[in-house]
Length: 149
Image (cartoon, rainbow, N blue to C red):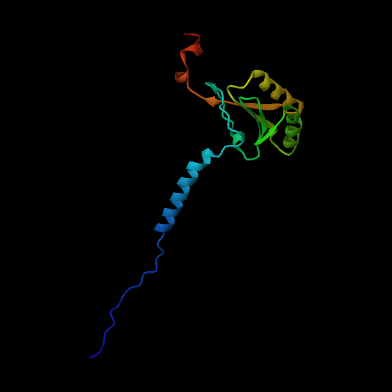
């Protein structure tokens, strides 16, 4: 009696399901974390209705000056004095092709501090200054914004 070996077909397909699962998880993690990665110091921005998107402000090499509510000045993440802004901005902007400086001002900051920062940036030879604000719709404005009480 002869033994017959059953014929079994061997499949050599690669199972990509685990790879797709891992890639989707990584994609979701990066989609959640990316908006949280903010350049510069956190400040509560003033709100405005008519804003313009500033795509250059999100770049890693953007020159950002921030004014906090307590009157501190920041160049990027580094706290600086008012006297150091002109020199620091001049040094940073000399390395860049985009000569725009983005200014983030806390909505509670004094106007004199903001005017001083803009003057210091202009003293560094910068002509393009962008003030960052938070966009809101007219529906979200309080009645006092329209002059009604």
